[in-house]
Image (tube, rainbow, N blue to C red):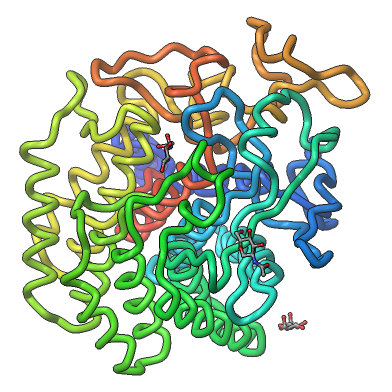
Length: 458
Ligand SMILES: *[C@@H]1O[C@H](CO)[C@@H](O)[C@H](O)[C@H]1NC(C)=O
Ligand SMILES: *[C@@H]1O[C@H](CO)[C@@H](O)[C@H](O)[C@H]1NC(C)=O
Ligand SMILES: *[C@@H]1O[C@H](CO)[C@@H](O)[C@H](O)[C@H]1NC(C)=O
């Protein structure tokens, strides 16, 4: 009997190793990355202890406290893993984390990460509650994308001015307000049975932000200049649908479904699912909520097209965007996994999602997640990680040195390879080696879904 048991254990280990990667470990690590991105006063249970309190004076135009939230990590077009709190990226990140915690809670539980996952989400939500200072005023950004990029060093040592930027009735941002409404509505569902008082606060802000978005229309990137360096929005119609779909799911109030359905025909682009493009997410959510075949058919066509005809790298990565190639693919896999969960091509979509994630975790001989596996990025483009501990000096010298980052930015998914699987672990290569909070959110959600399906090696 003992021998059989021992043999079973050996066999199990053998099967596990042959079977792939420990996705649970990756989720645990990914949550550490979120801790490394925290701005404001850090809590006593902070595990990433090389990060300290920072940006403690972030304030609105009338002195409102805007401390907290997440540093984005990295804006497009500028070489510097940055310290701006970009509202649109942060709210999208939060929506996706909430979606995963809600629909793949079992995956988080199996990884032993449910409580840490909720904390990661709450860190963003608490900031949104502060930033939503009155019914039709919401702070969109803290820190200037333009000023921020002249600096290389620790967030704890920043001395540059930290202007803040709002959206309001004369300078609206329907995309930003509706995305934040989506994040808060989805999070209401996550926290409803954890702390109903908190959940109800989230929901009331979600409703206000949505009606602000709906009544006062405009693109947030037309509202103030500073954002144009970094994250222009292509349109707000998709967010109006997506936000309404989440509010309908949270409240069951048919008014929101009507909004979603009416706005649907106004969506101007359909490029799937990304921080700027919410239509793919809205389709799968509306399919789930209404059972309407029209949404499901759209998703089926989209996923089939992505899997069969989209460009691939020679080693098999579905290649969608040269910037943040891995995160772009992860978002698509996320909506295709949700489509699979509705009974569409489940075997095919799940196998593909696993294959894409395994590419990221080491199938090419290299893991694109910092601190995971035996070979991973040691020079990711991230200012804080590139700095030695204070009081040692940290400036552009650290940017240029060929030495590895003194701090391991555990759990961060880097931008990823180019179209030919080309990648060099260079700090200056921000296209391929930057990190961002929103790079990790879809990726982490896919992992939670795969764990729930029983695909983790352990
Ligand atoms: C409304 O927002 C714009 C853009 O951020 C800002 O310039 C303007 O001062 C705001 N208006 C008020 C009354 O605060
Ligand atoms: C529930 O949420 C409310 C509002 O944020 C908070 O004041 C309270 O401390 C929370 N309760 C628990 C048990 O965490
Ligand atoms: C954003 O749009 C403005 C004009 O509306 C343009 O000048 C700028 O280059 C754009 N930025 C990005 C990152 O696309």
